[in-house]
Length: 237
Image 1 (spheres, rainbow, N blue to C red):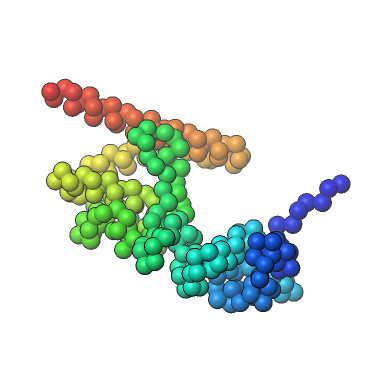
Image 2: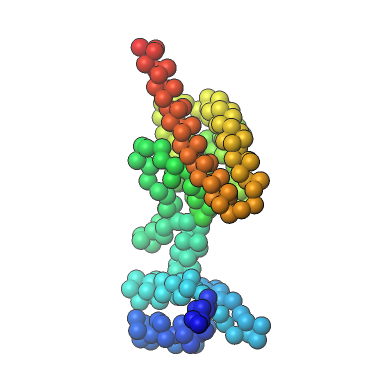
């Protein structure tokens, strides 16, 4: 009978895994990095540290940044915070981190509707990443096109802000976009009508099917919207 692998590592096991790459690593250094807040391993009831693979990779990042980039712990900690919020730390000291977003190639694929729940942006980061200004953001929030969730803005807020910023180059303002929000809310309602019966089922298969149907319908609704706009523009010629 095989014994399942443990989901955690002891501090000695972590030391063993890192020593081949970082010859000067010691248990004391691992404890020091923990005291500085760069890692936060769990503890057993008796007080022993329990390291996950995530903790191991964070340690590997910290040690690599110190050795290869000579970064101080303050900067490394800022970079880790950025990574935790779905950002890519800048390689230029003092520059802002940038969001890690999937590129959009013009196709409305269902995969584009998988929500990136990891990305968390401050207000300043949202403004810098999207290119809109404070006045535009206030207007978009007022019309309900962008909402803040807790202390941060998510990937949806960034996508809306970037799109609005590009439309602003043609003289379109937030007040012109309220009809887009109304139409989107109606489409969301239609999708919810379809998937609600699946969500009421408790099986994992039904939940997975609901997620798949939601992505497919979202993709199709955008394709239909684009086709109708194109058709209307063709008629106006």
